[in-house]
Amino acid sequence: MGAVTLPRQLTERVEFTLEPAPELSQLREQWRDLERRANPSFFQTWDWLGCWVEEARLSPLVLIGRQMGRGVLMALLERSNQRRYMVIETNALLLHHLGDKDRDILCIAYNGFLMDAQLSSSAIGDAISFLFSRSGCGPTETTPRWLEEFHMKGVPREYEEHPEVPGLNRVVLSRHMSWKVDLEGIRSSGKGYLEHLSSNTRYQIRRSIKRYKERGQLRADRAATVEEALECLEALKDLNKAYWQKRGQTPAFAYPFFESFHKRLIRETLPRGTVELLRVTVGNRPIGYLYNFVHQGWVYAYHSAFVYEDDPKLKPGLVCHVLCIERHLKERAHSYDFMAGDSRYKANLGTPGVEMLDVTYQRPLLKLRAENILRTIKRDLRIRLQKFARQ
Image (tube, rainbow, N blue to C red; front, side, top):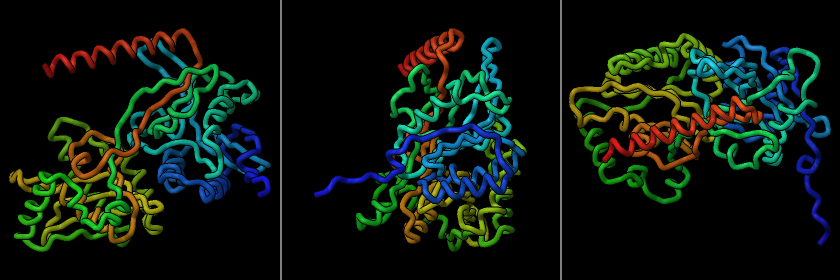
């Protein structure tokens, strides 16, 4: 047998540049080209990031990795002057977020560099090392000679598992378990979805469905037009705001950017089928709304709102998700992802998925090392207090 020749993309060195964003149409073309050769999550597609750039009116820096002149890695970076605890101030770059609570309310997940599917994961560390290297800094103000931190929100655990970057400290700021339903596994098992749930969850769902059906037909309808989808979003918003305000918390829709972004996303992507809004009704009365993203057979359950009643035996959230899951089972989707969060229904309806992390890379500066020590002490104290409270 002759020697095996690896594809050039797996062996050639990646050359990185950090550039001002070109015209939007050119950036879109470059991103879409790499997207076709990558295996991106929905949150790494131009559908999501293009709407983000346009709605936030950004001119981001663009990190590009090339092999033989062909783009194999891309990322959109925002410059940020970070201020924490009134004494810590750093110059930072942020991956696909802004460091602004009012606009980061979007809650990105499955974030990360957009990478050619044949590119080794070692390129992650190489890209981060480049951002901190002097070779990556030019004389213009668009390329930060002063970089002290690089922040990534909502990245999968892969970003913790690759080797550490020499000369930098990697700090995991938070971890969030995600939950999903393996639709392919359910189909191959020969059993229905409900049969994969605990007996108690299954009983609650069936009892609730029976009670709803006593009132009329139970159905889930997907918005067929942008106008219908925006009507569903408006109804979802009203239910969601009422639910959280009743509990003294601020709903996502209280932030204007959240609503304007999603209206843009729906207008631009619903015709392509990458977003869906479902209205679940009993008779003619709605009991819930689901807002999902659909990408390459992966369904992301992004947002929802339900009509809760005094009868505790009615479980609108469980019922709505079950109807949607069973619909996507028939449509041959491979995964229904509840994403990160500690809501009980996610664990009841799904199994553990990918752990999501907020990670920062830092220069080994004294002020940052001191901050990390204090953060560790604070976290350990909180854990001890929680254990004491349970005793």
